[in-house]
Amino acid sequence: MKNLTKYGWLFSAVTLIAGFLCLHFGLVNYGTTFFVIFPLAVGFSIGTHDTPAQRGWISLVLALLIFFGFLLAGALEGLICVAMALPIYLIAMGIGYLIQRSRKRRKPLDISDHLINSLSPLVVLLVLNPVEQALMPEPGLVEIETSVLLPYEADLVFDQVKQMDKLDAEKPWGIWLGLPAPYRCILEADTIGAKRHCLFDNGSIIAEITRYEKGKVLEMDVVDYSLTGREWFHFVDATYTFERQEGQTKITRTSSYKSVLYPRLYWKPLEGWGIAQEHKFVLASLRKNLEEMSAD
Image (cartoon, rainbow, N blue to C red; front, side):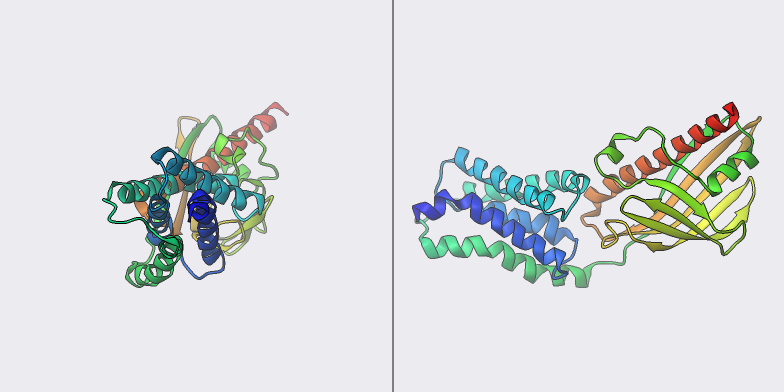
């Protein structure tokens, strides 16, 4: 039993990895059960081991580092996804650990008790996930809007947006961490129904033009999305609006999306920040292209 207790961090890391593999292969979903209840149960399990509190916290952090290290080393998740999920996992595991450590011990645990406690988080995950999914509402539509004022005529800005041969402005730090950013956008034709292909290093977004008013509005519905994250994230549409202001143009980029990541209180602000980073990069690239064209 001492060996089992000594290597509790390893059992916990294996449990976390097994839980992720359940997610990876579609046995569970990206909900509150996976992001809150499951890591809370893992922390609770770590707390059952008869070890000093300091060693228990070390086991908790070590298990978490091994888990996320496995995801990065196996290219199962990107750095930005790991960075976003780390805080909620750490907090949930810490709470679970504190709950168990605060309980009065009636008797020492034997080997079978430790094994049951090590396996219980997976049981909790697999049992509660379908219950959560049955009760979960349909994902709501979320809009993210970003604007910038450019010292150019609206028609010129419109022409530079509809098809961008290069997007190479300075990258915000979120994109450096791994958020997707396009490097080229191609428009098939200047008409409603035409496809606009935005190309990324690891995929593409294909949109269909639904509204085309030069110098006023460019509106698109996303019809295909092949980037990382498509399992939980779905772009619905994208719109550029152009407002003339005394020889300048206020361009506004609006993206609408749906997400199945829960709890929304945690994930929605992170999603909004991520999309705003992409908006910032695209609009900065637009400004850069316009400046280069003016200089030429």
